[in-house]
Image 1 (cartoon, rainbow, N blue to C red):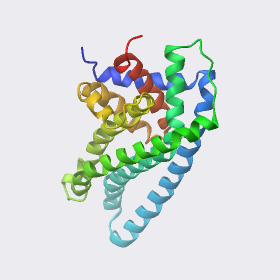
Image 2 (image 1 turned 90 degrees about the vertical axis):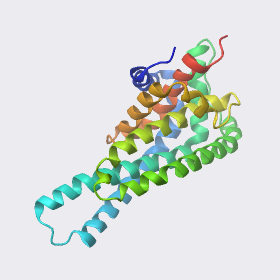
Image 3 (image 1 turned 120 degrees about the vertical axis):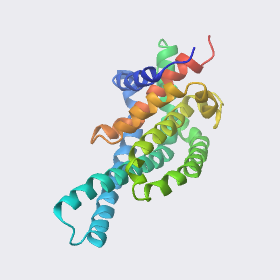
Length: 242
């Protein structure tokens, strides 16, 4: 029986709770620091881009028109830019994410086994994880360009932020489920195939993460929350029974 949208939201919340587990905290440091750096760069880029657009195209506009411009174009630029930067962060942090997924799975399925962080394991994971992350990024870019075109069409671009959140949710669900799957040799696009039968759950999980990426400070934890939550989802729905 397929799980629903609320089940996906529940896995995002499960990811939050898993990060508080003492044995897992050390595996969160790498993804967290990378997310802080990338989202700080995203915020600085967004601020400069938006100021440039206002100075170039909105000179002499009345105050009410500037408010509308901030609401419409600001929300559109923020959603698309921050989502794009989150995918870039996932590429950079992919080796750390693989180790975090492995630690979460061991915590959930074999809690009696000790957890240990190893730089040797990290470097051994780096090549495979970064290659898989780049494949997922190309998958995203190929499917995002129609939405990018829609985003610049006057009138239609009013719904673009909502579409970005939904599309971004689907992509983030794929991104993070790929971490535990990859640890078991199921390479991309295995995550796509798995989630096609659980679209509602995938959207509930991914949309929750999309919204987290837009909340200041909490967005720094969105990536490790996604990895932990997706690993819990994998253990419950996709892992072979032992």
